[in-house]
Image 1 (spheres, rainbow, N blue to C red):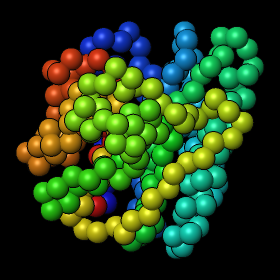
Image 2: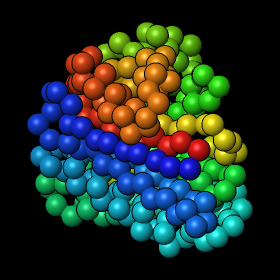
Image 3: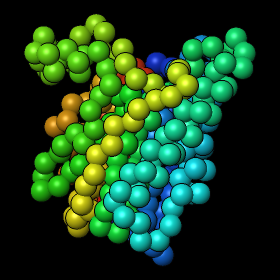
Length: 244
């Protein structure tokens, strides 16, 4: 089990409001990763994403222990998400320069054969195996709700004017509900965490093509960033690639 990550400001933004952390604890066959995409005026987005990721990491390190049950893994992830929300919300109400700041969050924790994913917002986690890609998270967004109601198709959602409107965010309210998804860790599986700077530029099959064509996982991250930038690079782009 190993992982690689990279973040890039893209072609249209002056700064980078994305932030990620990955930590591998090989002695216990454990790994955790978190990807955040911040938002807010001035530099507030950069502050929010970094603060959320660091608070998440600090709380998760406090919770992690050897041989965790899947229920404990889920509880530890939820606790870490809540810590991230507390940190950003406290900062957001501390002064006008931080008013309205927030961030998405997508994360996972693996312990041996057990894994749990958590997400808030529209940053995503994908599972790749047997030549196929599957989105493991569900976006908290206006377009995702419209798709669920049958008002638009997933293809139409890619160009819908309000596709960037999200319905759940870290740090804008005193409490937040994270969705969690459990999975069994299998050999020859890859996991991709990413911000919407990637998924707004590349569809799932384009992402899969870059992954299966590149034998070097570190170079795979670079190829994904490069491909998103070639398509326009409208936003900051972050990818974390994990190979089981």
